[in-house]
Amino acid sequence: MTEHKPPQAMTLFDLIARTWALKTEVRGLAFNASGSALSALLADGRLAFVSVKDAESPDSRVRVEADTGRANIRPRTKPLPPPVITEVPVARLEVRPGRLGDQGLAFAHAETGLLWRATARGQVLAMNAAPRLAPTALAALPRAGLLAAGFGSRLSLLAEAGGAEIACLELPHAVARIAVSADETRLACWGDGQVSLVGVKEPALGSTIACAGDLLELTWSPCGRWLLGGCRDKALLLVDVAAGTADRIVDFPAPVHNVAVSPAADAMVASGAFRVVGWRLPDLPFGTHDGTPIETGKPGLTLVDRIAVHPSRDLCAVGYGTGLVMLCRIGHGDEMLVREGTGDAVTALAWSDDGAHLAIGGTDGGLSIATFPNNMFK
Image (tube, rainbow, N blue to C red; front, side):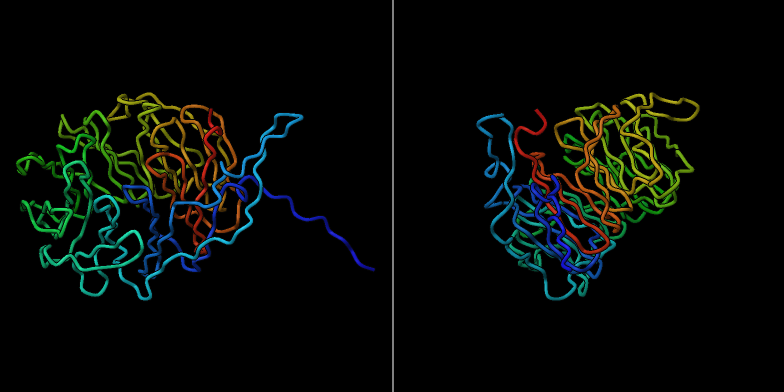
């Protein structure tokens, strides 16, 4: 006797997302500045590139039913173009790649240790004009057309085109993370348990502040008062730049992989707990002051592993160890399911600058771009 099973219904994610099987864990994701390409750093040091342009975008597949006026998204009919993947490991995992110009990506080469660049189409080339030193940290200053690079304790400002050194400065510690202020006038350089503040126009050391912890991520608040860091040792670092002092919020259940600021929600949010943790800006917890906490999404039994803040809306993408991806409104309990759990943890989330695309990477090597229709958030 033959048993007939009904076809599995397509989910919203099936209709709005493109997915590629890279078969190697995704460690990092980055859209280039023009938004034309997405790059993925894989656990074996290879780089993968996919085009953001979609011949069958969700908006082009929306149909409105004449009788009900209800909008539906039709399934795709064409196969996806394959990703471009470097044949051999090219990037050092411990140095996070940085944007380079409008189209490219800068990274530390796995074999030579020197600064290299990748194009939007996946071609990798040496930056021969750059210092013949091994970069330890990278960060882009797009408006100035510069790339900030740490070479041990040396901080350099390099030209985007070619990598020639424009200015350099010796710091009292090694540089493992670089954060650029919103107005690109200051750099925060962290390493060896210290953070140094450096002016960009005429590079000079402003101050150095002791900061305990093993930082995974470092970012400025838009007002320039705060530096915020997520730590591997299950803590959140806060630095009051004006006061020159630092504090830590400890005892998170897990490492704080991501900390981010939402200008639209005027809030700071972080991963590493059983819900998205956050506070209103500029009233953050510091010393004996509790700050103004906010609740985002709903608490659960699964740890929030990764978050990514929407560039222009009060929304936050949330990834879990189960592979579940949600979209939350910051400071509210509202949640929208983006992707059901796959059983493989989310390891990276990234928004495109225009907020139309959310990139998702996981331990299984799955790489997805979810593209949200124009009217979804209206």
